[in-house]
Figure 1 (cartoon, rainbow, N blue to C red):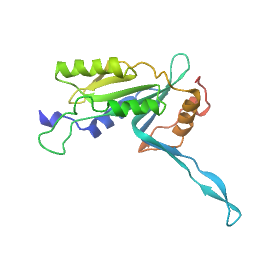
Figure 2 (cartoon, rainbow, N blue to C red):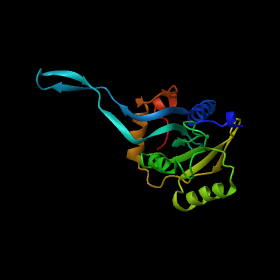
Figure 3 (cartoon, helix red, strand yellow):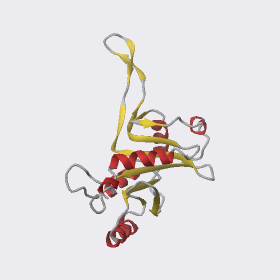
Figure 4 (cartoon, rainbow, N blue to C red):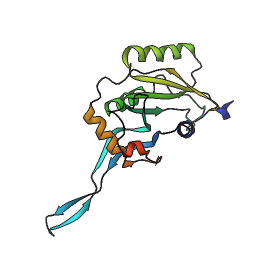
Length: 199
């Protein structure tokens, strides 16, 4: 039984690979921020030099997902992933509501929707409690559960859209997503390169 319990890294990798199956989606794994290479004038030498300013998030996106909906509107979703810990015995599941704070940070940083991905909750009381917590105090956070053997995952709670996102911030995120500081990202879709979407 214990060998089937999956760590955060295993769940992270599985979900990223699952999302890869969906067409026309741009994915970023462990997105910490972005950087642009620009030229600035060196005051001492009087010549332009390369400069790479960096923008860092408060909390990284475990997975960021950019896609278009049926109305061609750009949707940015953020995912915070938690799993069993194997740093000590016995192997333990994430504490109740772990990841909710990080998921809220993704909304502050500009995501339209935010999800926390967790191992399947075995205790009905905890499952109901987490849903109630989000229903009352974190309406824009969704809950996704994953089977212990990673055979399937499902959305337990759909999030409401982020009511505080601005067009300016969304454009900043899109431009930053094209130059991400991250562990891995997929090829940028043509529609994103051409800005063929509505904000």
